Image (cartoon, rainbow, N blue to C red; front, side, top):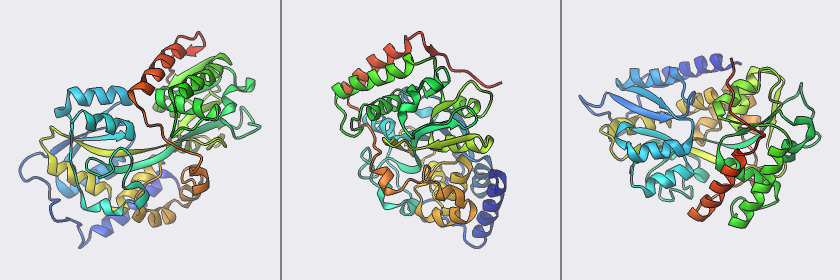
Length: 367
């Protein structure tokens, strides 16, 4: 079943679920007579237009989308212009930064109970005061089967002479350094400044192997399935799934060394003028049928346990794909980097050095 068919089927489920059961939890009614629009700051193509339309029809609240392409730029924008946004989609590190900057509003929504227990208390929000999980995944390797035949399922593929000049890395500093750590045999979760310096050497080897394109996630999705300029790419798991849906020659895997694991969550701006409407939207997105439809649309795993049985019926291939829903054995090899100012300083120096290489190519856009 393709994505459009899945969304249509799920919207039928949503419509039927709404008959006689509008799920208006106590305290979640939208603001009356004001705040009829909320601004959602997010990655591009991260929300189904059909689901946003459903929310507007149910509540009368319009969702205006504003997009960012870089998490660090997004964090700075929210810090200096918090009143411009109501709901923000952010990863754990960014939530840490924004909560430290005191630009987030405490939130609580009834449908948080639908989130699987292992996702409820992430390190960056142990008391679940500021965030509500949206999607999670890993950063993995995707490649073109018609261009290369990997001899192993390893991050070292990025250094293979066979792919020289046809490598794309995400233009995300922290994600790239986690690859370097894995290649160096270092722990992501317990990295030291010295470990990161070793990780930079691994990244330098990738760059010196041939021309490397540092690209946004959107550019990678567009370019990997087309032409022959990219043979292997570092990608977010759901983005790799979408690229594979566009071209049957795209495949992807979590390397044997492991991968970085991340979770994007909803947060609310401290300066929002539409707090109840923002909470109503977040609660809506946590309804099982809505979470299932969202996961199916974007191709990322949902932490909403009540949505899993729906996905099992609508898109069983997704739920059975171990690169999208890795088992506990794989997850034991994955981790997340807790960044301190000292670690960030090391990465900043290394990142600037990498981008000075003559082998680094500016991001390309598909025509």
